Amino acid sequence: MITATTEIYFNPLTRKPLLNSNSLMEVVEDCLKGKESAMKKFYEHFHGFALSVCLSYCENRDDALEVMNDGFLKVFKSLDKVENIERIKPWLRRIMINVAIDHYRKNIKNQTTQLPENIVEPNFGDTSVYAKLSSEDIMEAVQSLPTNYRLVFNLYAIEGYSHKEIGEMLKMAESTSRANLSLANGLLREKLRKML
Image (cartoon, rainbow, N blue to C red; front, side):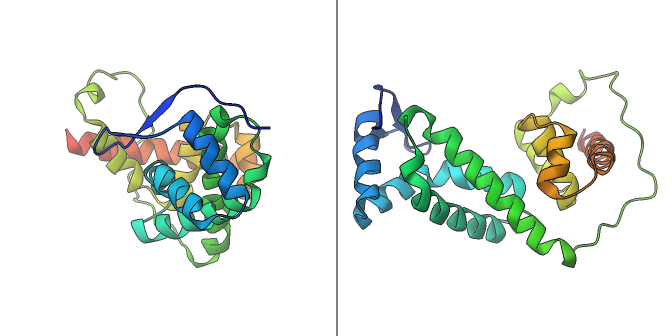
């Protein structure tokens, strides 16, 4: 049985209420019954959130949309595993990330990463300079990282995974994960320094 509270979700563009927890619970129950109208409501409700997660892990918007749609297919197939409606957003996020990782693994054979020759090792000293940058500048810099560096950076710095876990997820050595993070940090600092 699915439980709920009275949390209300808002459309980020209009700030109008979308579904509160009780109506979201009804939509989930209707999705489990196979009702397409409920699936559409669920998709519309979480579309923006899911797309933002996918954009963090994909190279471009087209790839992010493909990953998001594949993710929603997995969500609808395993929606019966949700026991508490309050945990649906983190659960959905986890699925989107896993689908993005699968997409990366499938396409890794076609990717080569060209590194600039003058990467400077990160200097963690003067962080006040970076405080002047907007979140959009930082996100743009993260998005511009080569895919393998961006994935490791996001999984480590944003999601909180260890290098061992990242290595297992991305089928790489733990030391490769550490090296990719170090290179990602260096590239990010270089890109952000140029933005100042």
